[in-house]
Length: 276
Image (cartoon, rainbow, N blue to C red; front, side, top):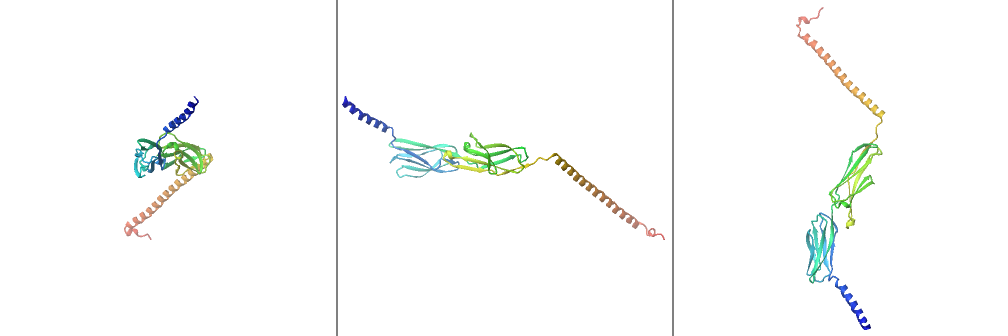
């Protein structure tokens, strides 16, 4: 009985070792990408490799355009140039060694930077205490959930807005009130944060817009302005009438003198003699 127990322990350990080793892969497959987040117009390098010493075949599986740049003499690795990506996708490297095939994949994220950022002030001129609206628009940006629009007054950040969904255009509307008569300089910043996807931050700015702010006029000031404008208008009309009347009077006097001289010259010489 004791001898059986002594023999059973080594047999059990050997069985465990054999079973644990049976689940291990015969070889490994690796994938390396120059970029994990790419712009739609970009091309980049992808490398597929394996630990198998003499793989029978291997390569890169993708629906994108690919060109093999170089490979190992025994086919242990292959490098490809990949391009023409339009949407997020998964690329796959595979190798076959001793009639066994293994593969590994990698997710690629496509982005489109915020190249055009516009800002509109509605209305562009307000009175102190009056409300106005600021509209920031970013067209053709991707991924939208990585975008943040920030309203800036000078260099001061006033408000942020993030987005969700699949739309490529983002619009943010900010409402505010003019509290000072000084002109306010506004701009909009679009920030695309690609760090969660293995990328970097891309920032774009709109052109600055100045909000013209005026103080409300008091009632007495308005009356004074109306009176002054009325007086100036009256003087202007009066001067025009006087110029017209004086011109007509001068014209008649001039024409009257010339008429008497003409009649005198048409008289016979006998009648033109002056009485003694």
